[in-house]
Amino acid sequence: NNGTPVTANAGKTEFIQLTPATAQSPATTMPLVGLGTWQAPAGQVEKAIVEALKAGYRHIDGAAVYGNEKEVGAALQTAFSEGIVKREELFVTSKLWNSEHAPENVEPALRQTLSDLGLEYLDLYLVHWPQAFKHVEGTKFPKDEDGNMIYDTESTHVATWRALQDCVDKGLVRHLGLSNFTKPQIQNILANSRI
Image (tube, rainbow, N blue to C red; front, side, top):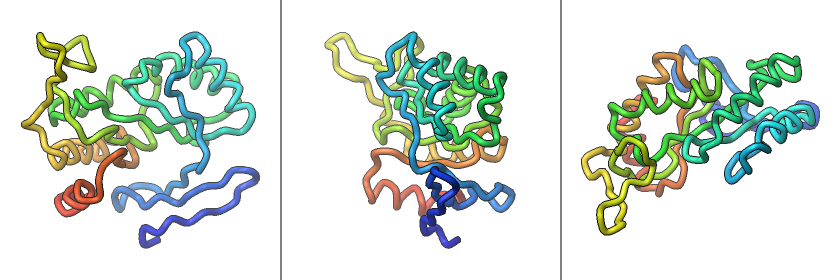
């Protein structure tokens, strides 16, 4: 379609049609309702996801910063091995964290998410927030000696997005998106991107 959201009823699940990222990308639908994993208590995430998938959920929404992607991955592997759902029936979203915006950190961050989830690709990878933090090993929230957040003032939204486009080209993710961005920030990325 021309980028206009289209919904269709498939049983009890409502879907939205996504515009393919590239001409080679398959047309994809995304379930409108998904199970979010933010603030899901450790030790309970796996069971919650397995039960949600048994109940018919087909969209799992997570993020590296939530700190539970390994447990989410264990749930997905359980669901696959028990025949609850096949990978191609599931829509998995994750998000690039603020400390990974520098272009050289984008693909390694995505590959870490894929490893933690036990997947070969994501259906959707969002830039979680427009703010970029300095990349400091061992922390997602880098702070100086006074406790102030250390921002990455060199990385640009466009450079981050271009690194994400390369991840689409490599088959690591099928669709890209933005979360918490302003209209001018989105327009700048769109004006300087091919996906």
